[in-house]
Each structure stands twice: as C-alpha cells, then as structure tokens.
Amino acid sequence: MGPDPRSASWVAERLRAGAASAEEIVRRSLARAGEVRELNCLSLLLQEEAIARAKVLDRERLAGMPLPPLAGVPFVVKNLLDVAGHPTLAGAEARQDEAPARRSAAVVRALIAAGAIPVALTQMDEYACGATGENVIGGPVRNPRDPTRITGGSSAGTAAAIAAGIAPLGLGSDTNGSIRAPAAFCGVWGLRPTTGGVSTQGCFPYAQSLDAVGPMASDAEGLALAYQAMQAAGPAGFGGTLLRGNAARGLRVGVLGAGFGDFAEDEARDAVLSVASGFRSARTIDLPDADLARDAASIISAFEVGYNHLQRGFAVNHPAYSAFVRQRMLAGLAIPESWYQTAKRYQAAWRKRIESLFDGVDLLLACTTPYVAPPIGVDRFAGTARIYRPRADAGHMTRPISLAGLPVVTAPCRRDGMPLGVQLIGPPGQEARCLEAALFLEAEGLCGRSQTAPPVQGRGRSGIPGIPPSHASPGRKRQSGATGPRRVRGP
Image 1 (cartoon, one colour):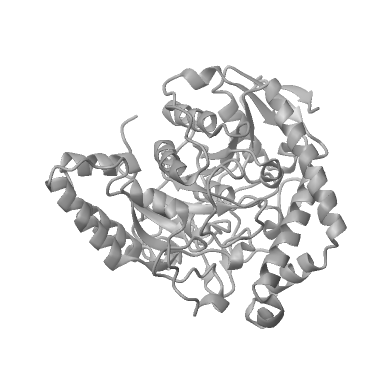
Image 2 (cartoon, rainbow, N blue to C red; image 1 turned 120 degrees about the vertical axis):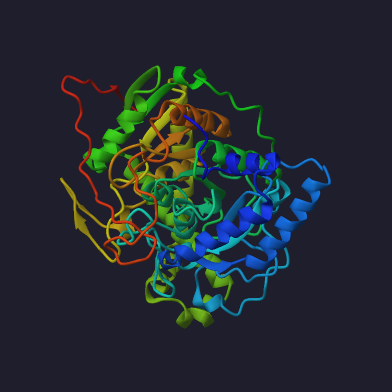
C-alpha cells in the first residue's frame, strides 16, 4: 500500500523534498476547514499564527537547517487543552470570558517542538461531560461520514476534523473513552496512553485519577509519530524503536467476550474477530462481572468531576451550566466519600486482575463502541437484541479499560458502511506494543481508512456543502464453517 496523501508522514516528506512549502500546506488545511465548516467541528481557527509558524519553518528549510520529524504537519487541539494566547473554553458558555492561557499544554508544546503546526481548536461536549458530541451551547458536531450522525464525545471535534481532512493529526483527552469512541465513530485512529504516562499539564481536569491525553490521527504511522513526539511530555522515554513488518503477527491475542462483546451488535463483534484473524493465535476471555468495573469507574468519575467543579465555583456559577451537565455535577456531589473510597479499592483489585491476563496473551482486543454512530438527537434506539442509550453506553466498552489504566489504540476496522473501531489493549507502559500491532494491521489492510468510503466533497442528501451521503450497512456475515477464538474465563 502506498503512502496516504492525508497522512502526517506524507505531508512532512513533501516539505522535506521541497514539493510543497509549509505555508502552502497550512493554507490548504485552513481552506479545508472553511469547506466543511458546517460540520461544526472547530471552535477557533488559528489562521494568523499558523501561517506565521509556517513561514518561519519555510525560512529554516531554505537556510538548510535540519527539520524536525513532524515539520509542517497541521494538527488540531481539543479546546480542553491550553493553547497560549487563547481562552480554554472546555465547551462551556461560562468560560467565554476566560482569560487567555499564558502557556500551552505540555502535549501541545511537544508537538510544536516536533515541527507540527496547530491550525484550530476543536469543539467538544460541555466540560467533557458527554459521550455524543452534542453540546446544547454550540450545537452537535457532525460526523463527516454521515452528517446526520453523532461523532461521539467528548473529543468530538478532533475526530471529525481529522476524518474530514482538515488535519492528519489532533489532540484529545480520554477519561472513560473520550478519544476512543469519537475515533471509532469517525473512522480514525486514537491512542489513550497508560494513565500517568503523558503529562496532563494544561488540560482542564475532568476526573484527575482517570484522565489521559493522547493523539488521534488519520493513519497508524501518524499516530505513532505523534505519540513519540509527545514523549517529551511524559515521565519516561518511548522505550525503543517501533518494530515494523510482520513481527506483530506472532502476538497472542485475547478477545474480550462476556462482559464486553456480548453487549455489542453483531457487526461490532465481527470487526473484532476480523482483526483477531491477523494474529498468530486468539482465544476468547470472559469477564462476566465487568459491570462492577463500569460502576466503579462511574462513581470515581462522578465524584471527582463534581468536586473539581465545586472548587471552581460551581456553587455560585451553576446557573451558567446546561441542565444536563448541572445534573451531572449535582449527582457527583451527592456521592458519599465512602462510596468513592470503596470504588478506589475495587479499582486496585480490577487493575491487578486485568494485568494478570497478560500472563497468557500479549494483547487484548475488544469492540471500541457497541454499534456504529447513531443519529444526532436520538436518546435511545433498538439494536438487534437490546435497547441502547448513546449518552449512557457509547463508552460501555472503554470504561473498564480506563479503570485499569491500560494503554489502548483504537483501530478503524476496514468495512463497508459506517466505521467501527477495535481496541488494541496492552499491558501498562506498553504503548509500543499497541502501536506495533496497529502498524501491522494497517499494512495488512485489516484496519485503516475504508477503501469504499466516499471522499468528503460535493453536496449529499444532507444538503450540507462538502458532505456526501452515507449508508449504514449490516455487519459482515461470518463465513460458513468459520470458527471463533478458543474461549476461557478470566481469572
């Protein structure tokens, strides 16, 4: 497979080869943002400063100075992360008059140091309290694959901007799935690092003991390059050069069944089995009591977000919150501290239990979301076997992994119709293993941009300029006689 012209590496190579200037690259990115503005994925275009950065880079290139690895690559930033000179809105009307950030977040500085150029801040759920990308203040972020559908949240705008071709890279945050679910719904790559593995300095907190910041990208190589650059914002180095080629084929994978896959639609489970087929061996691991982990994650998240906002003046400023988010804050503040401490004790036991699974496998696989992106504004919808509620269960598959603090790449599975993602879950600190698996799956054609996905251009049935129509398709049927992974019960 040849290089993707929408990838970070392709953009950086064109600059090095003199085939395009950084200014040309940035101006194309800004123009693309204008073409798809009705997706509502951006909160602020950084036009003047992006062009100024590009001109400096061009002068350095012409002077023969060495270029950093992501030189000239446009990227977008979730408006939960500080960008110097601009207020960090966090998707909230109450922060419209916030003072501009004096210093950019650590991860933003790390990408800039690697030569990447921030071109826009992106829309998100209010205070990151949402899983759908529907903000009652700014309106919903629309999915580039079908603008009648959600992007997922809360890193909604970053996923949509990458999928729409505004930039090949972006930054998001993930507490219980806020990078992974939008990436899966929009068909892009996302990485949630090991909790604490990358600095969250300059990120408005949601639930600090679960929060993580990470990259999103149009391809696996771009995801790896962004994460390597972000290691400047972490406590430890990347841990070596990524292995390429077929090395990852020999990985032993465990497919999370009961407690995970049994909640998903057939097409989501089929996507995981398709990915599992690329590895040496696969077995199913059942964790039927995973709902206890979900409950613990929900208690910890609600308790911490409530008290974080109480310390920021919620008692006085609560009328400025939307009704939905205000209820979330009040619910968190009503949780007894004894419940919180019990949930934290369970978290330690759950982490130990999940880590023990890696004694028998190298990588865990699970659906990222239980279904493809549902329509905007839908409170509930009927699946084949159950009723789903997107606000509550879009993160059903991601919350237990967050509770364990593990590194995860969400990989877009190649398929017809709307995108689906597969979580590639590694042991603590083993982002490299997840990324090696991602690079392998992309090279094998099992994951990546769908070959049948129409480009975002023309006028589709949606009536929005630059957005094509899209159709959901039923899940791929398993081949007759095909056998699934061997099933075992988790410890």
